[in-house]
Length: 327
Ligand SMILES: [Zn+2]
Ligand SMILES: [Zn+2]
Image 1 (cartoon, rainbow, N blue to C red):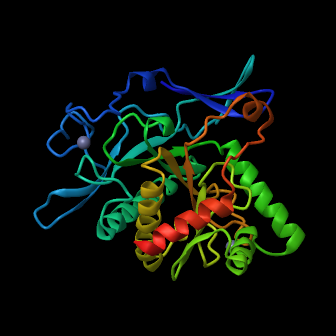
Image 2: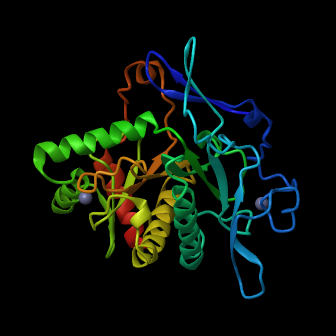
């Protein structure tokens, strides 16, 4: 069983999970039985939820992760116990996989808008299902890893969703900055950023009725992108159906340009949204972050947390903007 341990010096949480080392790895294109392909569902746990075609064949399916980061439902009693060397929380949480297509070689950037819309529908459904387990669950993290450098263990297109009884340091920091900005300026940092970026136009990749994709001014990675709703909306929990329609079109167009321009880079996609019990409705504003894995952090980055980005975001945005417009 995995354990959540808190470092006494940094307050960072770490999941110690020996079971995860046992999971299958197939990042090659070799013809091995893929556990996510139709017909191979049997050894995998049965589906939590499926979107099917008229013949009952699944098009998107959510399953429990067979090698979960967090597994045991949290105890309603004492959340954490003090150990001689830090705090420890046994197990606690849920880890699911969303299989995004029956097609082994599909990607979010190459699938149809209709299929991407089904994928987003499942993202929203599973996010809400896991969020409904609050207060045991305090944070739900939705992400996808594309490629070996982004940490994926299987080629077949899939996203993952982890419901955790602790709030991650990254999320805690982001929320603290959002609230500090609101206290100082009286408005949402993301709303203000979108307004400023739309005036400047320098880092905009795509505008659609409900979303804007831009390269952040201080991008930490070459070609880092944020896709943010134009409407001030604190949490992904509150995304509307018409926004998901627009996001499916927007996301596939941006990712298609991204994959073509960068020769199918490895990347991580994360839904940045506040924890369930710390939603500052005026200060938080959810978004999708795309982080390409084109650089490897070296000692300076790891030691200082100051990143060296070799690609100015203005150049990255101009290149991707042109590619999106020409498709
Ligand atoms: Zn497959
Ligand atoms: Zn806002």
